[in-house]
Length: 628
Ligand code: COA
Ligand code: AMP
Image 1 (tube, rainbow, N blue to C red):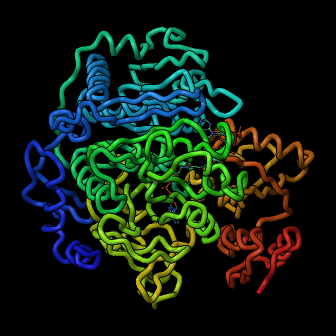
Image 2: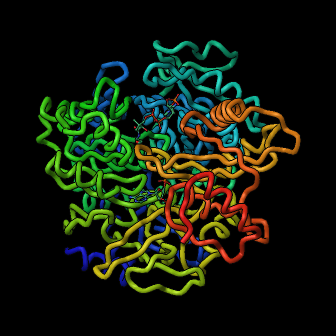
Image 3: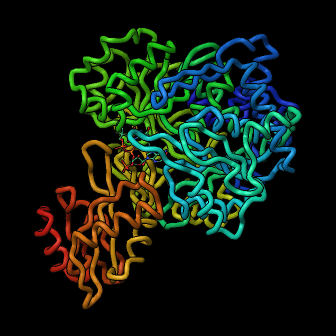
């Protein structure tokens, strides 16, 4: 099938298209229908069907004779070690840990928080939850106690799985004090805490009465079998940043997710059984959920779980070493990682040290792949470098160059075309379609394909308000961009207060909430400004309370510490500028977009709704922007 045929069928005959795709999954009760639109706009996929995601990721490959094949390769550049788990070994570890969870009373539908560094036990914990029908919610290890607590508050978990800590270059992150703090901040502390002890990091389960040691719990447990769940039952909740400080709990189902990811492995990434995919992300992000854990395992491929950085662990050849050591066929990473390598090794001399001939394709997502970085990677690697655009909410790519289905010409700066199942359009502020080449809101006509979010955890109102209410009949992506005359989509950036720092999605709203909590701050705005390495970085603008007497550098140091303490180091909040006033509209809305344009030295137009143009002028003089 060509791309055009597949796309047409997915839009015109979605039932046929997705029921065909569903054949890639082993069902307990096979679907007879693809889409359930009875509760539209709350769409459901594969009603009446049942399955187990872990069975599809592990058991069926062992049963098919792939037990000895590598399922997961844990490569730790931090420790200088590698450990390969065959499918049979991974199944054994997962079954035993699932048994340990079951022994603690965790059953289908219960939530389990997974707060783990990049070690195999993170994937094992996720798969163990899937095995018994429990709903995992992984929290990125770079988040601080308050962020962890906010997720515990919302998910009301029965258990929390963690490790003694993570390894960052030059320092260790002790997780247990963070977990203890988070549990002290929440009213919904889980009854069970299980800790994987890492000898490199102080702290263990025995530090707190009642906490369980991972190894002991798994050794004592009876291996658990697979619990059949409805295709529409949640597999996981993944919290992501919205425009407010409260994270959104994106809910993923079991059936649609398995079908979509299996389809994407073959048609997008061109990876099948026995082939090696390496996604250099973190299990705490959606990219890690989909393509470190579930996608490769669902199709019987081998996944690499890498603990380390692109540079400095130990050098800018780290990625090429991993590719050579494990015969990686597809590498998926964030553009920031490529920029980091380029900065240290502009001529990519390190590549010559390794045999990277297995590498067929480099995939990038998480932020826009800027043309400069695209050109560099293409020239240095001599293989296709593929940008693809997606979000936590969609769970897999909205736009891509489908390498397995039909490779298309690459245009630098564009993630190519809509993936089958996604009807992408550009609308202006009033909801009218715009002409080719004109920038507007990128929206997706409902229903979205399988694998996309089923809603927000126990908050249908917020789901509708955030995504569906602005343009009825469409899902609002929050990104703006345009489609060119050839149908190529260009994603230019967020049109809301979400920012992407080194491919990490963060909310400026939550940073503002922290900054506003400082005794000397009357009001503030945090905006995302351009950053050469990380794509964007947060930048804070504060107005002091009348009479506040604090040295600006002292204030900066205190605010940086507060954001680090309450959100996490990953926010990389470092810039603070004291201003006399913030530019606002007459209705009091802070003109963040204009501020961003000024800070980025882009051209900007003074909005007609401005309350006091002098405030904007003062900011422009301070930051050196240009008025058009
Ligand atoms: N646990 C605890 N802390 C973490 C963490 C984790 N899992 N991940 C990052 N941090 C900390 C870092 O140690 C750093 O702390 P510091 O301020 O004390 O130095 C801070 O958060 C910022 O981290 P990071 O954004 O990783 O910046 P860096 O300067 O350490 O590294 C890059 C720069 C480019 C090497 C790194 O950002 C990178 O690898 N980017 C690719 C990102 C990626 O894969 N994103 C996934 C989306 S697909
Ligand atoms: P996340 O939910 O963390 O995956 O972040 C999703 C957001 O990252 C999107 O809404 C975009 O703003 C941005 N993003 C991800 N991939 C791309 C891409 N390939 N091109 C442009 N922006 C991207």
